[in-house]
Each structure stands twice: as C-alpha cells, then as structure tokens.
Image (cartoon, rainbow, N blue to C red):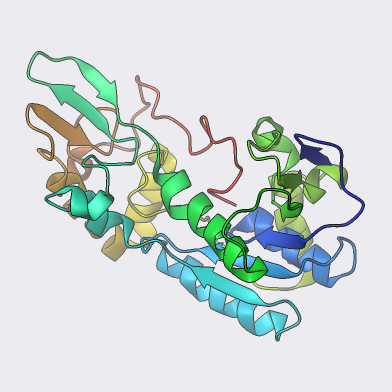
Length: 276
C-alpha cells in the first residue's frame, strides 16, 4: 500500500527503507532480500543514542547479513538523553524536554510533555541524509519512496506523508502481515529474532515493558531510573516523571494494573518510525 499527497510517480529519485532494527522493519528487510518486496536504494537507521544494546547488536547482525547488498546508512542528530539533561537551550535547541514525560506542578495539575523526539531524532536526521544522498538542499520536486514496517495490527499508523515529495510504502499491509506473523516468519526463516525497538527512557513503555526491562536488562533499567530522577525538576515548578503514576520509576509496582493510561509508543505517531 502506497500513500502520497500527489499521484504516484512513474519514476522515483530514491527508494529508502526506514530501518529501526525491530520486528516489523527487519521483516521488511528480509522480505526484500527474499525478493518479495522491491529493493530500495538504501536503508537508513536513525540512532537516538539511547537505543537498547540489543538493538545495536541486532543492527550489526543485519549489517553482516546484508553483506553490502543494500547500503546501510546510520545517522544521528545527537544523544537524546544528553540533550534532555542539558542545562540550556544549547542541548535541545528548544529549551525543554522534547519527549512526552509526565509533569505535575505545585498545584497538582498534571500534564504531558510535547512529543517532538520522533521528529527531532528520527525523522529529520533521515530527511537530512536523503538530501545528502541526492545532493540537494531541498527535496521540493523530488519523489522519494519511504518503505516502512507497519503491520496490520498497527494500521492506524499508515497515513499520508506531510511532504509532497514523500511516498509512504507499507509492504506488510500488502502482505497482510501482523506483528505476530512477522515473528513467525522470522522464526521459520531461521534467522535471529529482532528485539523491540524503542528508546530505553521512552515514557511510552507499558508496565509490561518496564518489568521486562527491569527483569532482563537491569543495567538499562538503572539508566532509565537515573534519567527519571534527573528530569524531576528540569522545569521550574514542574516535577517530571517517566511513569504516568507520578511515582519514581524504581518505586513503581509494574505488576499492578494501571489506573492511568500510560500512553502508547504509537499515539500521534503519524510517521511510523518508532518501534519498528
């Protein structure tokens, strides 16, 4: 399924696989190598600097598996954690934490931070790399196909791009594949199973995901706890938290049913970049 703001072109200036090294985008990559999905000109991985170590390991695995059949470009704006903890606008270039942390002021009013992290650390670095590859300052008048791993259980994420030059292609929807189908396909293919692709400190982790991180990756959980404490008073009069309970992360009972919606990685995520 292809979605665009304009009629589909007869010829593309560039075809790009947005590779997150997670389940869905890795499935798309394997389908490409199997000849089921048309081959892109390049695969691009946008590194936030806070990807789980298993994601970096799996990215290296994919790089070796590719064996230069498709060029793999790794791009990065900067380290999202370092930027969030910066004392001035020099860090984030905005002066506020660009991820959706949960805040509460002195009067008890609760709020959710702006979600600009996907755009700043995933989308824009990929767009910058596309301009670099094409040797242009602007993509106006160009036609670039963005291949993304959106599965049938996340079909709400498949939307028209905001840019005129971009054509979004969702091969898993054409193949009628869910996330479960992707895992089954990878198992049948007898290749290494990919991990979940999302930042370690992502506030959209569910209780199950936080518990999984705590049980299986204690070092990374400690990093998330340290970050949770570090953001507590980053804005005067506001206390920030990674968890919607407004409790320090290391004190949350993740096995207890949440009364407050924790949010989802896919909420308002129209580009289909995170978590794939």
